[in-house]
Length: 110
Image 1 (cartoon, rainbow, N blue to C red):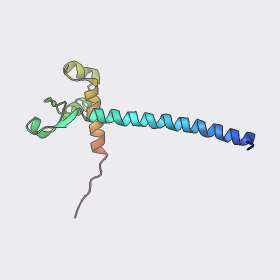
Image 2: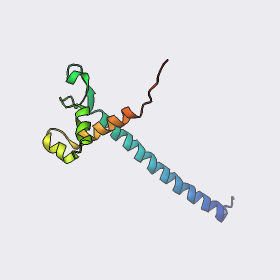
Image 3: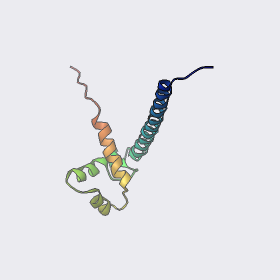
Image 4: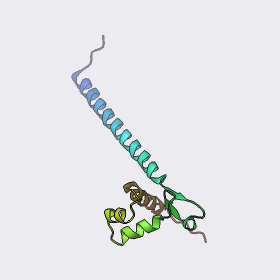
């Protein structure tokens, strides 16, 4: 018969707690990534619409227009009131799209 000491049980207990915390964190990150993908699916580039600029859900409202409104000081609620066909997730998608684009490094060739 194997005898397990009190210290070994204590270590096993803490390892189980850490595993549970890790599993919870894993699923939170996975859900966040899925949410980001869902948001980015709201942005499309369609030749012939707005000169091929990124637009929201295929409509004639560009990502840059939304970003310019936000940069100009409009709140999300003001934008949604002025553009009733937009949704909260559309504005979040524009911000997410801009964040993704700004994270790329520029490479210069000489």
